[in-house]
Each structure stands twice: as C-alpha cells, then as structure tokens.
Length: 67
View 1: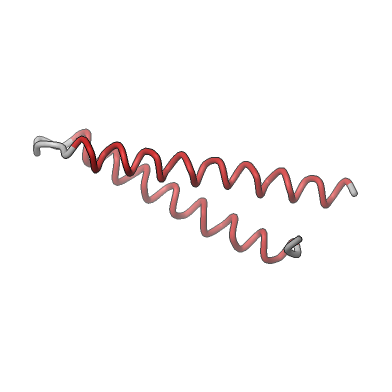
View 2: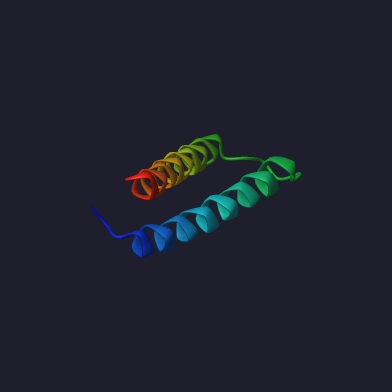
C-alpha cells in the first residue's frame, strides 16, 4: 500500500482535475455553442472516475488512521 503522503498528493491532484472537469463541463453546457454529446459524455465519465478515486483514497486514508 502507498504511504499516506503519496495518497495525499494523489488526492490533491485528483481533486484539482475533478474541479477542472467540473468547470469545463459547466462552460460547455452553459455556452451558446453546439455541444458535442460524445465529448460531453466522455468528460462526465472521466469526472465520475475521479470522484470514485477521490472517495477510495479518502477511505484508504481513514483506514490508515484507524489502523
């Protein structure tokens, strides 16, 4: 298992990427430009993957603290 510092760094990186995707999706859906639905779907899946990984890392960090 990775040490806590590596997990914290990865967590920060994933949160940053998740936030960037969130902002990108907001801009895409709120603009007057036509939206590429395939690209939109791929970005949403990627954002969901980051959310899942963030939750997993947070869980791993909590388990390490408890153990």
